[in-house]
Image 1 (cartoon, rainbow, N blue to C red):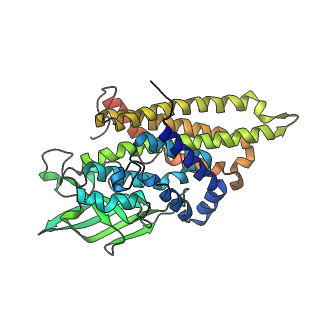
Image 2 (image 1 turned 60 degrees about the vertical axis):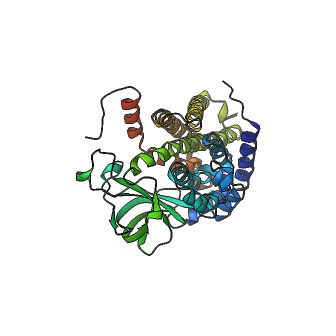
Image 3 (image 1 turned 90 degrees about the horizontal axis):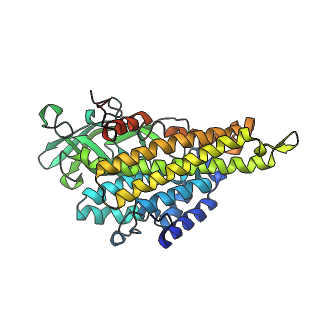
Length: 393
């Protein structure tokens, strides 16, 4: 087993590190405060083809895998960006994996080169007000009329739709009472934005205001057969292939944010003196950070394994098990790390100017989204340990 990075991986890591250093904590503090999309940052990573890391070269991407993507995410987040470095890459990854796995050649040629260059941004319209994590219970309908689909419904917690040029939409195309199997009857669609049939309203939130989140209302949206992604009625199974990479990107983000917070706290602990000694010399502050860092490194290795499984074509259930475990461990460890980093700053940890409070707000989202820690644990309990299902009642 070789843990050394390849030459290509080292180049991606170095490029991400240099970009992150140009867009440090002060940049993201301003974007968060002013609720501004980080256009300069996005244009920079677009020129570096970071949105196209996993897109084949023939479609304008770098032709790499999830292993290289999570390296880039960690480096961006760790070296000054916090979650800002990967929030928008996450949505591009979800759309990209769906198109790569299930798109027609025409769809790939039409969208992937633009995604790779950062010319179009993506969003995912999955969650609904009354369904939450129970995707199979969504109510948004796509009804076929002649050669068209007519879509009506509501979505919630849809990030970046105000910036996106492409939306990955999941809707019910067969009523639940007419399907033979519970997972059938949902379909995926690619929707170009903006569209007058789609209205949205911003949801004010606790953090990450450089990536706005919305409630979405869809009324009589008309789509053609060319908008259908993959097979009709198998959208749930198609989207699963995108949710596993989503887990890995979130785990990598948590790891990056944790390392950024730890690094910042360590530097402060060397300079800050109480009585006569630097506070970093106190074991009461050293041990919690050291313990959290050890857990972060363990999560990093587990996440690398998940990416390797995905890149080598392992069964989606095995990929899902490892990706969910990586997400759980990384998020728990990151929350612990940022908590103790904030504690080292004392009262200054609550001050905006020291940034750690922003990273605290960011990392705590991962307890809840894109999947709650509890649902990830339920997956592990059922599909890894072989215990009875604890949901889907």
